[in-house]
Amino acid sequence: MEEKEYTLVEHLEELRKRLIIICVVFVVTLLIGFIFAPDILQFLKSQDVAKHVDWNVFGYTDGISIYVKCALIVSICITLPIAMHQLWLFTKPALTDQESNSAAIFIPVAFLLFIIGISFSYFILFPLMLNFMSNINESIGATETYGMKQYFTLMFNLLIPVGLVFELPVIILFLTKLGIVTPNRLRKMRKVSYFILIVIGVMISPPDFVSDFLIIIPLLLLFEISIIVSEKTYKKQLKTAQQEGTE
Image (cartoon, rainbow, N blue to C red; front, side):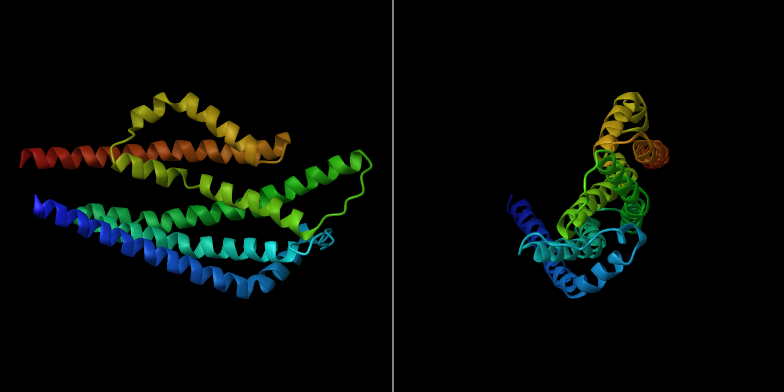
């Protein structure tokens, strides 16, 4: 009984250690983000999508608000792979060597999908959203006077959700390894999943058909890729279980 209690305390101490590392990395990278925020903002300002926007501010706190959001993006991008690595280190003692090696693949794949999602939203979806909004405003004869806060708030509210949605294959793979989902269960839930993904796509994309199409199709493809990945993982697990049963 004492051994189990001691083991539980050890696990909690290890978890606390990993969480502290993640928090320290987040704070340090947030400070780094503040340092490089002016350069990043100037780079974003030089892009074609921002050239028609006058960089006005309508409140004293608008500048610092943009700095915080820019630093936050930098911090999330750097902290994400480190947080995943810490999670892997925490679970590694309970895994076999084969499971540990396969789990380590999650880190670069998840980070790559997150970067792809952010890039897709910034270079494709965001310009479409701005063009659609500008056309609507022009059609009603409105004079467009945008501030930095409105511009970056709209951009950040699009980048992060799309980046997280692109993590779907990794999440499905992780849930498959835990035995929570199976390929057959995913196939049975395909219609419901499609409906949910379409709703999510419509919510995070600009309110026009082309933009909805551009975000919904990748989401559906990601779900189908998730089923394929889940099926391969599930077959490997069954094969391993059969081999262990025959020994």
